[in-house]
Every structure is written in structure tokens, then in C-alpha cells.
Amino acid sequence: MCPPRHFAVEYAINPWMDPSKPVDAGRAMAQWAELRDTYRRLGHTVEEIAPQPGLPDMVFAANSGTVIDGRVLGARFRAAERAAEAEHFRRWFVEHGYRDVTMPSRINEAEGDFAWTGRLLLAGTGFRTDPAAHAEAQEVLGVPVLSLRLVEPRYYHLDTALFVLSEATESAPAQIAYYPEAFSAGSRRVLARLFADAVPADAADAECFGLNGVSDGRNVVLPLEATALASRLADRGYEPVLVDISELRKAGGGPKCCTLEIRK
Ligand code: ARG
Image 1: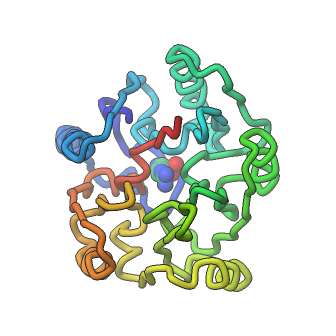
Image 2 (image 1 turned 45 degrees about the vertical axis):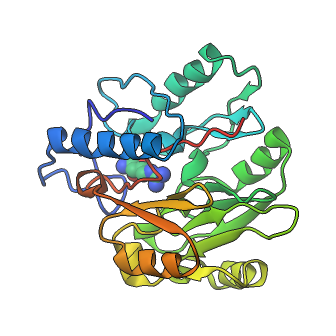
């Protein structure tokens, strides 16, 4: 995670961002700290990268790396405003002992568009990540990649429209939640085929960034407003944990965007 010390909305690279509207940096920091402390309270280890001046979106760490089995595929941003973030994260991985770190040649916004189910890497395209980056991820990470097409500009990253609730095990398939309307007709059919048991989400769930959740297979961290989705998840045996991310949402981000998950 990256503390939002230099957080601001100074440019607009997604429909949520409006540079004419004020953001409260102190509040953003408090909300972020609450998210970090929530993970720690749930028993997870959180490591922090140093925030850099001039990179107001660096708080969205999920966009900067995809780590599976200790292998790291770095990022390559679509927007020039975020390009320099990728190198800070590459250096963090190298300095923290990751030996297998590859930087992509195609535009690749990492976990913004990649979701690991334990078997498959679901990969979004349409707004940010180049479809050619999907093949590159398969080759570098050595996992099967499944391409999905996003069609709704407000859900510009896969992680704004879909997340994994529990990874596949020997005996059970992965379970996901997703908002079908964010996907092309073909991708919707693929998702319905592969994840018949998915938790459905509607426009109201998506609108408050409810699909930008982080699950450890039991506890599911969600934005405060995602109460309807939370109760559907509770019905399925999950433990919803609600956090206030209203300030970070002004940049088009939620809990997942702030969280790069390291799978060693
Ligand atoms: N302002 C950032 C951007 O548009 C938000 C990124 C949110 N991250 C995410 N994983 N969806 O790039």
C-alpha cells in the first residue's frame, strides 16, 4: 500500500475525477490508514511503499504490479500522468528481494485489470490494459489468462466491476462477484459459463465501488455504502467489513485499488 501523502485530483483520466472539486487530503489519509489498520486487524501483513511528490494517484498501488507465486509483472500506464509510478514499484520489488521481476512492453495496469482466481488470471481490457498485455502476462507469469472486455467508461478497470471472493481449491471452484452490465455481451456469456455460482451485483452496488472489494476468502472489505452487496455476501457465509473510502473515490478508486496483493 502507498500512503496518500500527495493525493489530489489534478487531472481527469477517468469519469469519476473532477479537478474542479476539492479533495480533503487529511481525510483521504485517515480513510487510507483505517483501511490499512483493518487489514492488520484481520491478521494480514501490510507493507508500505514511500509516496512520491507529483504522483497523486500513487495511492492506487493495485495498478503497479501483479504477483503470483513470487513472480512479479510490473506495470506500464496508459496515462502519462501516472507513468513514473511503475519504476518506483519495480524498485520496491527488487529492493525487497523479488528476483523474478519483469516489466511489460504493453500497457498493463496490473491488478486494476488482472484478478487471480487461483487457477485463471481474469484480464480486463477496453479502457486501460492493452489486450496484447494479456498474452504477455500469460507468458511472463506462466498462468492461463482469460480476456474480458469492459464496455462502460465508469468501470474502466476490471477491479471496478468484478472481484474474487474465494480462490479455487482442490475441491471447490473460485467464487466471484461481478456487475454484468460493465462487460460486453460475449464476456458476460463467458462469465456466466465459468462462474455459475457468482454473487450478482447491480448498478447500485457498482456505483459505490462495491465491486472494488478485497476478500481473503472469509472477510470481505467493502466501501461503507455497499450495504446491499454486503448482506448478499453475508448470506453466502462471508464476513463483510465496511470502510469509508469516500475521499479516494473522488479519484475513481476504492479499497481494492489501494491494495496490491502479494502472492508469494
Ligand atoms: N485515478 C486513478 C486512475 O484513473 C484511479 C485508479 C484506481 N485503481 C484501480 N485499481 N481501479 O488511474
